Length: 339
Image (cartoon, rainbow, N blue to C red; front, side):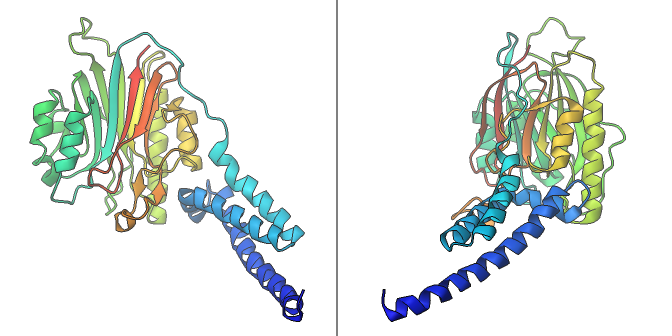
């Protein structure tokens, strides 16, 4: 070892220790915040970026270990476990088999303030979808969806949707009943969010047209960009979850939409628990669905906030996140078999 190497090694160790300490302090604060996400607004916001928090914890543990800082490395490993467990813990899954009708459902936030919907219309009409839920459907967008009107024979009645529906549904199945879920709080501020739809459906050509073969909920609570919006989103999800739980026992149910809530949020987990539904993705670490278009050519950085949930007796044959169709959300699609 040269004199330079000998003198530089303690300096490098001190520098790496300082860097690791600063990173560790920030990660401890962030981890404590997200562990209290149920009551702490900023903690719940951090759940949108839990994989990044997990990755930063891994990197810090690696830096501390390589530099020989055992105590810092041990603390970082604890943070790795705390931030990583929600990503890999086991999930309650839907049925492994069913013997009823098969169908394909999808949900898509359309980004309602753009001018070109060509890719969205092509994907929506060429993907074999039976029931399509949409969010951010402005009156402007709706006037440009004639291709969807021609493709899907059933939609909720115009007097229910109004001129600015926001939450929309298109279906090849017959609608027995369409309504908005009652007593859902809607915050009239920028950030979208609309009254959730509830549809009672039967397959084409079904003989029993009195009892629904499927009940579908399409959701879009407001984005939690402020504390008031966060409170409103959480109340919205709670009311809808309780409405689903109150459905007659044995009713096959699908709930889908832009929840503006990542998989790792305690409010999403509470929705699953209260409603009794299962996440069709089958994992606690699904692919990103909401991403920043500014960096879309480099990376789809964002969170899984678009979900399809199903009754435990529905079989999920396939689940996938769809392609870029011009929105800042990827569509989500699932092939299902009803009981």
